[in-house]
Image (cartoon, rainbow, N blue to C red):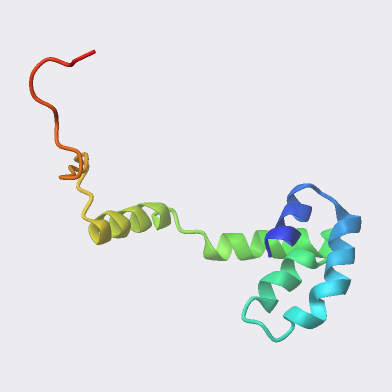
Length: 95
């Protein structure tokens, strides 16, 4: 999926077509087959479909929800993490 995504972003239709012909049979039964079909589709078909999928799946609060969940899971409350591995040195630096 990364390779075909890169071809799409580079607008490299020839490489995308070669990739589609080579990997379509292998990816047909995978869970990502729908995404692959969308990305590997010819540009005249892909653009309207990708726009519709993006509009359907886009959520303005998606990033905020993800970040809140990430912070909750990893215990990040906006304060820098402290570690006992390297305690602060006391006194004047030497050197």
